[in-house]
Image (cartoon, rainbow, N blue to C red):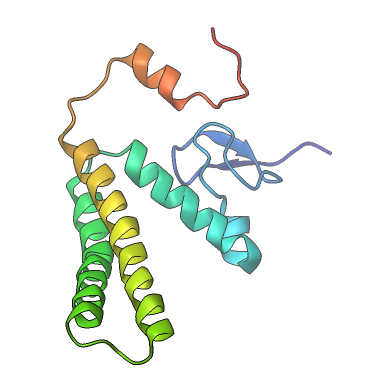
Length: 140
């Protein structure tokens, strides 16, 4: 029985239907993203990783800003509310303050990385190939 071949939805490479992730680009296959809800966080993490490191498309930047800018604004609003008026007891203020800081750090980091990646000049093939190599792979 021969092994069936599928096409990677991320890069278009031929992959085995048994693969959960593309060995070339790391994109989740349709089997993982649709049928395995436990793998959804990992698949979403890989999608954000690809958005931060590889594509230079305006739609990616716009969608990431639409997703994470509200988190940034809400984080700032939470900190301002806690500092100005407080939201309850001391423990509640502390929790809301650090939730706001966490939202700002998360959203700010992702927005900065995606936006700076979009405006960065394209790399040469040798540099991008080294940067895309996984840590356990030996150098050429």
